[in-house]
Image (cartoon, rainbow, N blue to C red; front, side):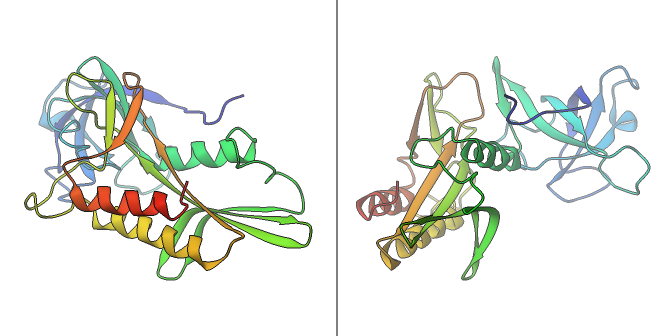
Length: 240
């Protein structure tokens, strides 16, 4: 069974990110194989959903693109960068696909303890607004007259420790070692703890997707002390 199907894939090379023409860091100039000669004048605008993916999607990077518009619509970016060929590994660069994969796995009863949501009486939804945030996946089950609530956050971990098979999360730019890499990731863990404490019939999960073919282990980034603290606190309070 296919959990996600790509269409209209092409290979390309990143010439510049941000683009010369659109200064958003989410847009890159990319040369597409066999369309024009290589060079800045023969590039097209492509959406880069993970920015530079910790330096992997910058000038010179070999990428795989998916065509997202057929040309009949007025869009700046016709293609989206979805994979990068980096140091002999194929690495996913689109975190939105991780969300779709996990949603489809839950819907098809493929994750232990997260099954049974495909039944008519139960409920499964993406992007559920909770307080001031959106939870990636929210589910409800009705068991013996009791409503069980499931809150599921999904994180994509495309970066690994050099010369190992260990993927780490989070990873990215920070001002100094005193700063956390992602305050947003810390906040999500704290929110899951709050939700878990709200009811004995509330279940909270954080699911990590490692979109690369050279890793077998995932761990919190030990260089980010605050994230590791939030992570340990979440586990202690029942977040799975």
